[in-house]
Image (cartoon, rainbow, N blue to C red; front, side, top):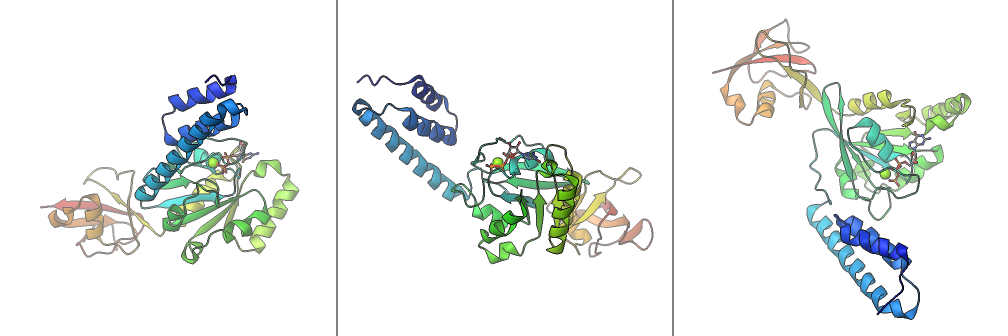
Length: 304
Ligand SMILES: Nc1nc2c(ncn2[C@@H]2O[C@H](COP(=O)(O)OP(=O)(O)OP(=O)(O)O)[C@@H](O)[C@H]2O)c(=O)[nH]1
Ligand SMILES: [Mg+2]
């Protein structure tokens, strides 16, 4: 039956057929319902689209439940999650901190599923996750509850408490937190000083940032790294310069842990190592597998 559809509807329909992800399909179906003519002739089609929408939505939700998350994020050694209300600038922060290219927009509820990026700071790879706005239907509590560090993004001091109140899991609330007061570029110096003083008086670990001017971004990177309880061990081949990328270990890890981190089973091949740095009494001290390493040690392995 001819329905005399508007060009907007036809565009939405074309988007639906060209969509490559379920999310794009859902968005196109939403647009199709909105732009469909209101008259009776289009009723069957409207029902049909609504059914398609419901079915797809259910499929997506089941898939998500099964995999834990749509993208099946594999947690890395160090992970921080961007949490905040819509439009606070979470995706913009992911973009300036990492190599990721998330969607950024001035309208609300832009991010529909988690986006991942890696921040490389002082040789450490830190996984940063951008989530949909907290308390929205796409928010992922599981990712937030499993992370190491919470980055709470706000535009106003009054947003901090309501945002924290939305975190229901008590253990999650005890995790290291950084209050990221974003969009600081829109305030004058006097207001900035007042914001800093208030945050200080509330004893928050905080930083004022702008993704437009990059103010505070380096400070934020430093603060993020400091929240992880880790030590960095640099390996070196005898007679060569140390590797740039450290092995990341928990504090009080041994030489054996370091060897196993390089390759499972490698510690069985290690005869001894030479260590130079905070855990050694002198340069190139010969050590065994039980030796406890410290942050910034440089290690040379000798194998059988
Ligand atoms: N002035 C100013 N605007 C910013 C800053 N950071 C982000 N914005 C703007 O704020 C709007 C929202 O940015 P997004 O990064 O998409 O915000 P979001 O928190 O990811 O939003 P949702 O995905 O909806 O939760 C965009 O128009 C950005 O350009 C900033 O530091 N200063
Ligand atoms: Mg976003």
